[in-house]
Image (cartoon, rainbow, N blue to C red):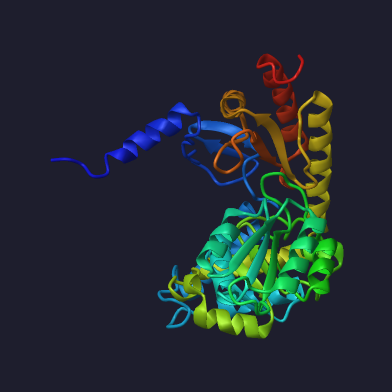
Length: 403
């Protein structure tokens, strides 16, 4: 009997042959600066746990209390019987933290983007997107029926030109003005670690009557006062209409959220399909997220340590001769170009006790393969010393840098 899915094995084999296949590393310990991966204890530079919250004792205690008081699961979607006081409290805490009227929590940052973009845009609208925006933004735009334009990465002049044409010509099918023009950008770009030129983007949008959506997944908890994000970093409060964020990076737990007006929240509760058709967060998740926001406000040393580690690690990698691209944040790529070289370098580092994963196509361009390292507040000087020594030795052995 023939197998109609036999081609799947051929596609996997092709990925392996092209050095594009990525096995799933298995952790046998808590996430942290040192963890056990595939049977080996390693210093990790591969997690998004910027502030070390995945193992913070206050978050663990909050989660334990929530399990005792509310159980291990919510048992329903939010619109039926799955909205608990913990969920509503988290959304109030997030709104206060981000300085907006309302927030709505989703099951992930991906779900937040694929939930909000199709709700706020439709056939009468235009979305204008940065060329390097996250895959969740791209998929959210695909789910929308809006027209789409892409401007070159961080090119505000090109964005302004697209907006001017859109306003002057209107929708090409009807000649009528667009109901909404929505400019969408990441706050911090996840593969290169650079920051969007938000003041210029906001000014261009305002000049042309457009709204702005910022996905601040890698900015929240990293930039701004006590990690309030890219909007706070640039001081453009009240000028960004929609913020999307995550609870699974700097917050250290799980989920995503959309922040904006009360009307936006209310419409999302009625129309956003990922929200409507997914069971709500377990009580422990919601409680731990709220506790994380409290810790951010109270523990200044976390941000001081995060940025001290980041500055040192970047400077030393550059001194050794590595190309770290255009990063401005704790996301520090080590550029390789060739996929096979990136995978090989990562494997040799792992054998030496450093976990720094390779990133290859289709996550980045075919010629943009790299190791993406992320420094956290939980890394000690000793961790950084050992990592830098290992990068230097392995990079020299492989001919990536001059020995």
